[in-house]
Image 1 (cartoon, rainbow, N blue to C red):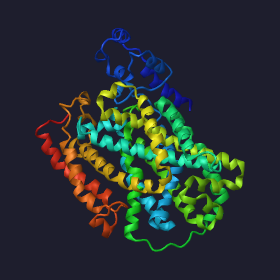
Image 2: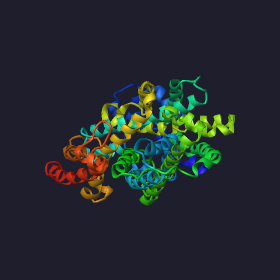
Image 3: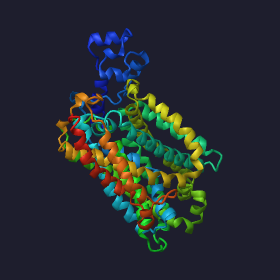
Image 4: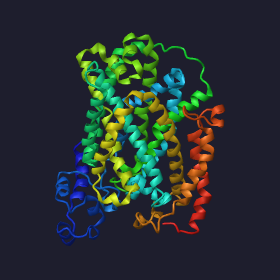
Amino acid sequence: MVDDLKGVDRIVDIEKRPHDRKSTALAEDGSSIQELSHAQKDWHYSHRWSRRLLQWGLETRGITPVAESERVDTQYSKIFFIWFSMNFNILSFSAGTLGPVIFGLGLRDSCLVILFFTLLCSALPAYLSTWGPKLGLRQMCQARYSFGYYAVAIPAIFNLCGMLGFSILNAILGGQTLSSISDGRLSWSVGIVVITIVSLLVSFCGYRVLNWYERLCWIPVLVVYLVAVGVGGKHLTNPPVAEPATAKSILAFAATTAGFTITYCALGSDFTIYYTPTVPSWKIFMYSYLGFNIPIILLQCLGAAVVLSAPFVPAWEAGYADGNVGGLIEAMLQPTGNFGKFLTVLMALSVTANIAGTFYSFCLSFQVLAPPFAAVPRYMFSILATAILIPVSIVGAHKFYDTLTNFLGLIGYWASAFGAVVLVEHLLIRRGDFTRYDLRYWDDPRRLPTGLAALGACLLSCALIVPSMDQVWFVGPIGEKTGDLGFELAFFAAGILYVPLRYLELRYRPLV
C-alpha cells in the first residue's frame, strides 16, 4: 500500500510540477489561454481556485495525452481493483436475476450463459486497457484515429448515454436498498440522492482518490455477501427444476449479458494512461480480464440462484415484492438483526464504486464530444453528470426491471460495432504497431481520418443488426426465428465492412 501511494504521488507531482516561468506568469496575468501548454489548458491554470484544488491533489487533466515522461505509475495491479470494485456490487447480482425472471431460464442454463459470454465479451475491454500505457490516450480520444475528430462524437454520445444508463441503474438499486432497511420511512428518492452525492465526491477528486477508493471498497461488500450466503445458503441447495431452455431465450439473455460487459470497451484505457510504457501488455490484460470476470460471473450466478429460491422462502419473497432487489438482499440478512441492517447499508453503498468510475469517464467522453470544453477541468463534468443522474433516476426508479432489460439489450449493439472498428484499425490497418499512431495530430481534424469509413461500417452493419434484434419493443424477422443475434452480427459486420471503406479513405487522407 505504501508503494502504491508513492506511485500515485509521482503522478500528482507531475500535475503540480511548475511550468516554465514565462508560461506561468502569463497565466497568472490573465493572458490568452492559447499561450499555455496543453496541460495548463486542461487545468485552467489561470484560475486561483483551480490552482488551489491542484495543490490539494485533485486530478484536473482531461483528454490531453499523457507524455511518455509522465507515465510513471508502476502499481499495475490497481487496474484489477478498478474493474473488480466497479463490478463487485448489487447491480451485478441483479443482472444475474434476469435469466430466471425475464427469460425463464433455470440455474444451470443461466450460469452457463453468464460464464461463457462474460469470458468472451470481457476480452475486448481488457485488451483495450493495455493501450493506455503505450499511447497515453483516453479511450474515446484514441478512437479519433479511426472515427476522426468530428465523427467520434457519435460513439461519444452513445457512450455518454450508456454510462448514464449504468449510473441510473446503480443509483436506483442503491436507493432501493437504503429504503428497504427503513421500512419505507426513507424514500427511494432520498436514497438515490445519498448514493449519487457519495459517488460525486470520489469522482471529483480524480485518479488518486478513485484508485484508493476502488482498492478498498470491495472488502465490506465481500463481507456482506459472505454473511448473506452464510445465513441463507441452506435455501440454495435444491434449485427448482426448470423448463427446457429454448435457443431464443438463451440468445436473448446472452445479448443482455454481453451488454453488461462489452460496453466497458469505450472506457478501457481511461484508467491506465499513467502506467509506464514498458509494462508488458499481457500483465495489464490479465489484471483487467480477471477484474471483470471474477465479480461478474460470481455475483450474477449468485443472483440467479437466489431469485430462483425466493418463492420458497417467505421472507425473501416478501422482500422481493415488485422486483425490489435491495429488499431481497435485506431479507437475506434479516436473521442477523441490526447487524444485517448495517450490512445492507454497506451493500447499498457498493454501487458508488461503479458510479464514481463511470463519472470519471463521463467527463472525458464529454470533452471528446465537445472539444472546446477540453479547457474546462475534468471534475466540473462530474457535477454535470450528477445534475442529470438524480432526477432521471428518481423518475425511473419504479420501472427498474423493464429499464434494465431494455437498456442492456440495446447497449451491446453499438459497443460491439465500436469495438470492432477500433480493433480492426489497430490490428490490420496499423499492424498492431503503436508507433504508427502519430500523437502530434491527436487533436488535428485536418490530419486525422475523416471518420466516414468508421461511421459507414457501423451504419451499414445496421442492415444485419436490426433484422436480428429480439427486444421487448422490437423483434426483427431473423430475431423472431433465431433469437437475438444483434451484438454478434454488429461486431463481425462492422469489422468486415470497415476494411474496404478504410482503405478507400486512406487514398484521400494518409495514415497518421
